[in-house]
Image (cartoon, rainbow, N blue to C red; front, side, top):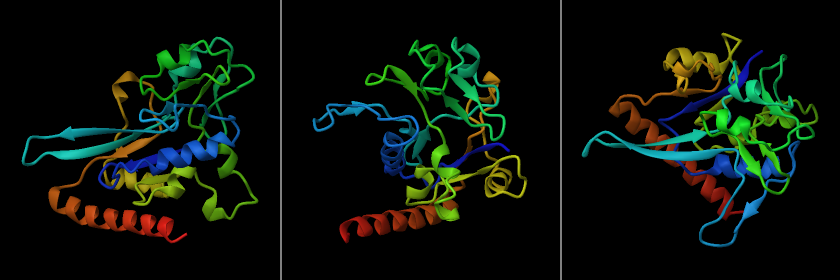
Length: 228
């Protein structure tokens, strides 16, 4: 089994719902509280395991804004695991998820320096490294309905731009999407073989159709929040 995410760069609208849901779930999850800095001021910061980077590509009038969520890639040959001096960073054999043993982590930052994706953050409240766990405490929770045994970021995405599944299963949705949309790894030339995969933008006509559907999803999410 090789669990990971597919992210559709066409349908991600940069709403940051995934990052917020990730922080909320993991603050009370297996890795403990995630600290905040200046949470109610104009420049809040803190520990975030899922960040969205925004790029403008192409030349006007044909430029395009691309929102690119970034989190741990759960690499098959993870540099963060290789450099960890205490064995705190490890990759699970049963599902390929990369985790950090908080009891072994001494906050030396070596894993953060080794990770080319900026996926790890030192949490000043605990002095240990934190990162995406694929909500491992959620996806295996048999007390939850099967449909809810997915990472928080996937469940909350209003445009369904994030898909979770097993890349070792050729019939899984993530495998099918990767084949059909020519899914790409991020910086494969480094040799870490990241599991998470990005779906590249479609042609302009397809993009317009997807944008309409995506914005409808955002409006539905806003309406649910307002009507609570």
